[in-house]
Length: 317
Ligand SMILES: Nc1ncnc2c1ncn2[C@@H]1O[C@H](COP(=O)(O)OP(=O)(O)OP(=O)(O)O)[C@@H](O)[C@H]1O
Ligand SMILES: [Mg+2]
Image 1 (cartoon, rainbow, N blue to C red):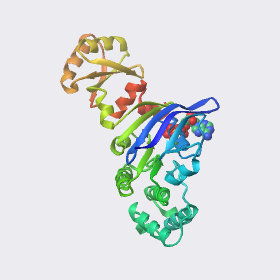
Image 2: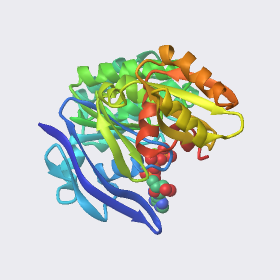
Image 3: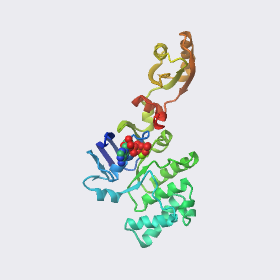
Image 4: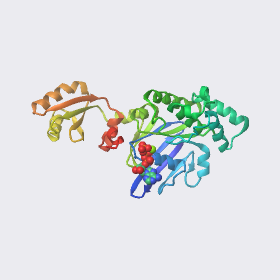
């Protein structure tokens, strides 16, 4: 059973094509990641799915309900945690949850019990009666997630759940989200621009770039697609074409060039191939600045499918 089905979504903002034919589907009970750099179209996709934005064309359904034709039914089944927190800093964590529950039509014992349950579940029970202004970033983000869960949704949308958190809090949040997915038997769609987050958290993921999905699969599948290790050869004087020929001559497949000076090539076993690669380059009179070998990462997957470097693109370079 598919919890989310997205077909050929398109959306423009003036000249900007935010979504340029986005298609993917998410199975029930799955944690699905949309991974992409700044401006890729992740939040826009989520906003279409939670019925806050209408697409120009294409279709999408959540829990079997069409987002355009049955927005009310969609809203009843989903929880949405936006990229920017919506909590009231002057209220306590408990007050924020109770208010959200009332907005969702809950009251009395049911709401009180649910609030206590969620405070425990996201690990902020000890701080429940403190005002949110005094919470750390991680505690706020946990409260945000609890707010999205008050009305017991089946499908939860988490837009950048860990942006702004320090690395330690981020790792804790990953465990939290994994536990929540099981405890509440949720389907979760999360967006992220952290490769490691998608790798650790998502059962399956889609990489988004410039409004389209470039590739989709489990983290393991995506990395296996690349077949072999990546060797990054940084050249001192930019003799890129010559270096490519030399690499190909020793059985390394040149795949990409980054910034006009680093050739990325793929080999079966990077460690074993390295001495041969270095001596062949030196033998050809090519001055090498640095060489490194890496096991396939999602960064390599991104580079392979878009020809661009994820990290620098995310920084807007
Ligand atoms: N309301 C809007 N008006 C104008 N342009 C918009 C609007 N919302 C999004 N865009 C543009 O659409 C593109 C996709 O934006 P979106 O917010 O979906 O990206 P994102 O992948 O969520 O990025 P980030 O990682 O920075 O959150 C961007 O170029 C953005 O500037
Ligand atoms: Mg966004």
